[in-house]
Each structure stands twice: as structure tokens, then as C-alpha cells.
Length: 406
Image (tube, rainbow, N blue to C red):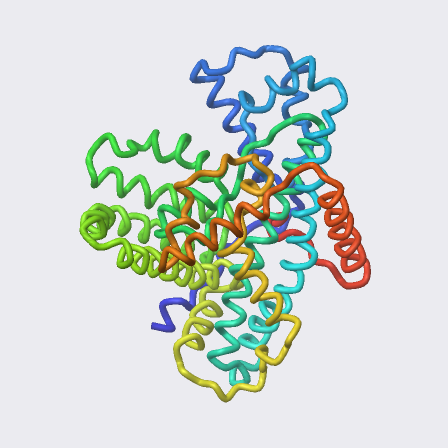
């Protein structure tokens, strides 16, 4: 089995590339395809230049389409200073994103880097517990790192009076891999669906074509992240799990509908937990430099060895941040709900996860308590978040955003 993963990376030209070339390219591809399809009739270069130079989202998304951005930029009201509500909401969202990046993601990088260094240099010192801590930490790190940038970009757009599209919506509340991709990097998922999956046939030409289109789409999505076998395998495995979820989805839904409410709650919570574990295992492949390193970490996760001396569990700061991250992910409303940029719905998953009705009501009360309103109190805590983030950013070696590499 180990030999299967002893694959060399695809050789690539060691050339300098512009920052965020992938995101920039995606916006241009979408523009050209939409023009060819007759969805855009714009022929003024000045307007096109305005579209491609709007900067908040250029580095790492959200991927913005011409028809989403230009009408807002051309509105007369957008040319004026943004309203007080947009400005305060934008500053709040920017602060939330900065907090996610500096206080959560950058600290979570510590056990992740330690795990991968240990696997490469001193694998005997890495225990199964260390491997799980590092793997789960990366799941939280990449979420807070990437969604933090998206929050900052959307917040910066609001300061200019422009609403950018939502890019994340509680992805670790997903009850399946297909559901995960409806919540994770939403603008990329939409791009892949509209410009690859549907042109390949989508779900209009039978299940065989649909499943082939899913696999091709996810393989290309993985390859977009980098010309390495780790990304290709990561995308391909996501495609396999999406196909499996389509095959099992209807049967599972029919079975679940016949169960009592309490059992449905247990089943849904189990599906969310299982999906998180699968996503975490696949993130190992995404983070690893080679497939062999990913395979070694997977082996460590399940070898039952508790005698290593890496002892990530004794790093109390890291463990506190992991616990806080879990509470933020599974208890609090996401930033889009908190700031009202996504309408709060009685059908949001948080209302269905709890095992018993009392817990469900507690979750609902907790959600509604943490909702943004323009007030002195919110101004105070946002200022504190900014202050704490800036101090930590300049007092420690901060890391660049993960998706700056793509």
C-alpha cells in the first residue's frame, strides 16, 4: 500500500508567477465565457478595467462575476461614501476575519507544522494522538485562514458600498461531502459547476455521464490548487465521495424520514461527525508535500501508538485554541449569519443537530444572542478584536494566507 503513494510530484517550471494568478484568471475566464454566451454585452474597456481592478477579493476570492460586481460599481449611490451601516458592518466583518486569521489560524499552524516536520524527520516520536491533533488543527486552520480572508474581503467591499458574494457557510456543519462543497469556497464550487460540470452534461444525460462529470470536475478542481499528485488525489477522492453520496443519498433520506425525531437527530449528528472526519483525512493529503507523507500520517492516525514524545497535547495554548475553534464552528452562527449578510433561517442545520429539544432551544438562544447590531458595545468589542489581532500579528511571526499560493 505504501508503494502506491510513492509518487513523484509532477515536474513544473520554476518560474515566478503573479500573486493570486488563479483567482484572477478565473474571473477572466468567467467573463469571456459569459460574453461568448451573450450574457454580457459590455464593450467599454474602461468598465472592464474597473471590473478587473476592484481589489478586495483579487488575492484569494471570493471569485466575483462581472454581472455581480459591475452593476454595483456603476450605481450612482456607490460613488458616494458608503452609508454608516455599511461602513460599520464592513469594519466589523473585517475585524472578525482578522481575528480568525491572526488569533485562531496562525496559532493552529503550530501543531500542524510540528506534525509534518515530525513525520518527515523523526516519525518515531509522533504518536497517534499527535497525528489527530495536527490533522484536526489543520481542518480548523485552513477554514479560519481562508474564511478569514473572505470575511476581510467582503468587509472591505462593504466599506466601499459593494456587497461581494458569500464564500463560506458553516462547511463543517455539512452532512455529506456534496453538502460540504455547497458550503466550502462557494464561489469556486459555483464556477466549477457552471463552467465545467454543466457543460460536460451535468445531471441531464443519465447517471453515468453525471458521475463522470463530477469526477472530471473535482480532478480539475484539485489540479487548480497545484500541479502535484497530492492535489490531484485530493480532488479525485472528493469526487469519489460526492458520487457515493449521490448513490446513497436518496436511500438514506428515505430511511431517515421513517425514524422518530430523536433518532433523526442522532443520525444527522453522526453524519456531520463522519463528514468532518472524512474531510479531515482528505485535508491531510492537501497539506502534505508528497503522497508518501500523507500516507505516513494516515498510518499514524490509526496505528494506536500513544508512546511518542512530540506531545502536542501538552501545549495548553494550542489545545485551548482547538477547543475554542470547535465551539466557534459548531455552536456560534457563522459570520454571514452574524452580520445578516445571509438571512437567518429556521432550516439552518444548527437547529437540527441537537440530540434533544432542550439542547436545540439552547442552541437557538445562543445563536440569536450573538447577532450584530449597530451599538456602542459592538464598537467596543470590535476595537478590542482589532487591538488584540494587531498586537499578536506584530509580536509573533505571522503566516501568509494559505490560499495566497493558489
